[in-house]
Amino acid sequence: MSETTTEADVRDNKALNRFELDAHGEIAFANYRRAGGRIVITHTDTPPPLRGRGIASRLVRGALDLIRAEGAKVSAGCGFVADYLDAHPEYADLTA
Image (cartoon, rainbow, N blue to C red):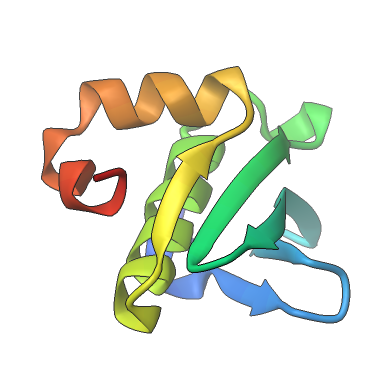
């Protein structure tokens, strides 16, 4: 099965305070809370059928791109996001 979802498919569901990525009818999401000018991503979840396909990385990358476009900063409140930020220095400006 080829994967066609991209980080551009990530949307900010403000009503639920989470970023979402619809992949093959399943929703991966990253919960967040706002704290001043920062967005704290508190939890990421990828449905079991989607795990191991890079969906969570696409979700986080898309969320970070949306945060950057908004002019906000990000804090990692979950291990996956912290690890992603450590591995992707191109997003270091968002954590300053």
